[in-house]
Length: 139
Image 1 (spheres, one colour):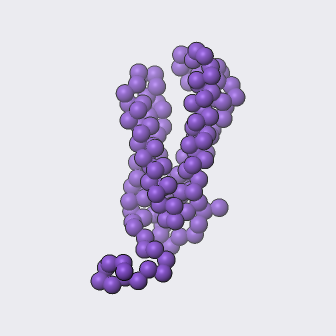
Image 2 (cartoon, one colour):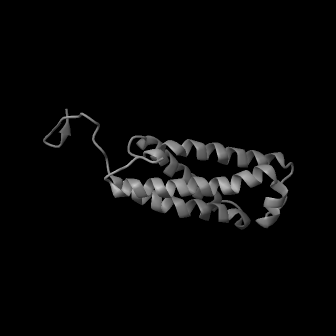
Image 3 (cartoon, one colour):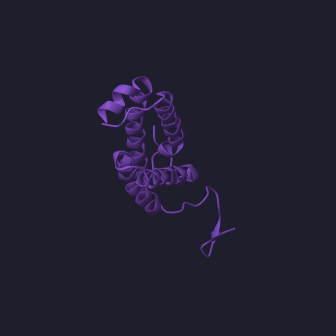
């Protein structure tokens, strides 16, 4: 369950990131279990050996699990939140340089990268609990 924030941008970041995790898993789990069928469904060439398609799916599952602290509380786990945004950008850039058949994966990451980056920027820096601020500086 996500943390309750008075900061609406943080709440919306967590929602979008959570939807992204679910979307990742919706692609990765079936690919892990039935890679040939998923590649055919996506009109992608067969992978030889299938181990590599399954391994990529496993890595996507693991990456999605690492997003969960940011989904739970992006202000508390701010570095994880920014790393998840960076991972989306890395996916966009990687697939932009691949053959056209694979660029849909980059578009998939772009759909999450743009709102997550904007929302996390708008959520702004948060002061540490108990920190004393004097003239705008933490002491």
